[in-house]
Length: 368
Image 1: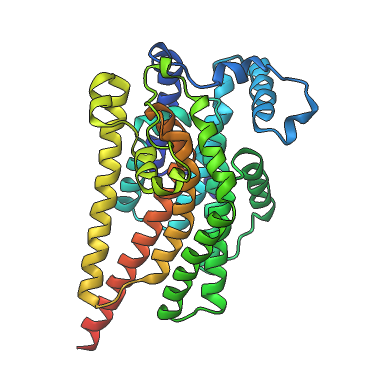
Image 2: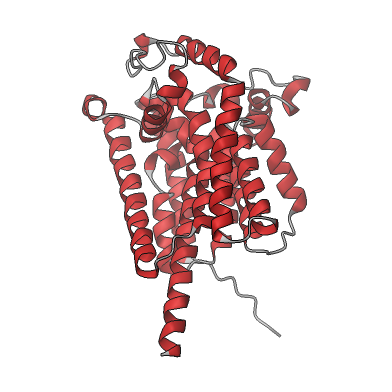
């Protein structure tokens, strides 16, 4: 008779323990310094009982969080949201087939305090990590020509994305179109480069067609940020018509990075997120440098994985930046929605380029 054995990867086990720790830190420590978004509102179920819960993200959060609160209590009601965020991360990361050293690196980036806190409580960020993780796992399977046996789960993830973050679908569908055309029509590297140019052309065309609506929206955004809030910046970014486009590169940068040096010095929570962002950018730059060195050594640049990353990430950063440009706290909080998606997608391309280089290097040694 075979003995049942359950093997648990130590890194994943530590990651789960960290997430649980972040949940308690958020509820009993971090909440003393700042508000935890709308978590209390969701747990209280302000719109509980409304029939609009299945197509409104806020109503759905009220329904789910309050339902869990009634059964499990206000503290443990956060656990289901913690669990789905972990599963979303696991679903996408597992498809990278990482060794322990690679897994340690990516889980380290996904264990930073801000991400850990906002995605380990009853929050829209936790739900976003779940559905974006499922969608990314599906896309990775598609890229690697592997069958995906979770079609129902993938469809559910797309439904949640449409309810919670419909603006992200622009980047996701851009990525899916790029992968599909790269596999069927634009097969050679030069063809893929042309496809990336087409992506930028059609993206600019789309922005041009909706320039009036986007411009109007940019002037509405400052009304949602009160200068009495302490961290809100004076609006100098959307002053004239179409500033939303001209200032997009800078806005996308600060909306992802968060606090400036002066803001970091003024508030302890901002100081933590400032160093987090420095670490993230440092890891990204280090990986990019390694890819550049590989390209120099091989006299080849992997256009395909570059296109995979930019088609999704640039759109997501663009639609995110109006929500984070005027307030570093909002920038960091809303960043956590897509942070794991961007990290795993970036690291996926980096690992694939690195592995292809190692395979070709081994092959060349054997042929000598």
